[in-house]
Image (cartoon, rainbow, N blue to C red; front, side):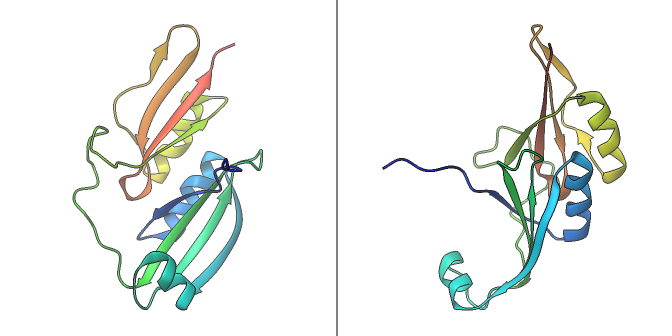
Length: 146
């Protein structure tokens, strides 16, 4: 049996509103919000007493989703600095195709985005960059050139 699709990528955040604003500015659409708790949440996460707020965002084409979660209980745990380099095992990176990479970076800067390196050109095919978004998550951007 093969998978049907990738449903979503989940990111735990401290400030849900800041994270929502960042990804909405990127071009995602807020699909909905919910408060999650109870036995099923405990069973799925392997945690006891789960109580969190989530926001589901989708890409404009409707094919990809991002789930942002802010834990009320148990409290979220930091596993180290948020400015870790890209080559750390298990580091989260989410990549988005954009139509104007430099304009997108400029729009995201007021929301706390910082380039990890610099905007790079891959042959005459793509402009690429990684930037840090909310909670130090690395967000990749790719603009296809002609």
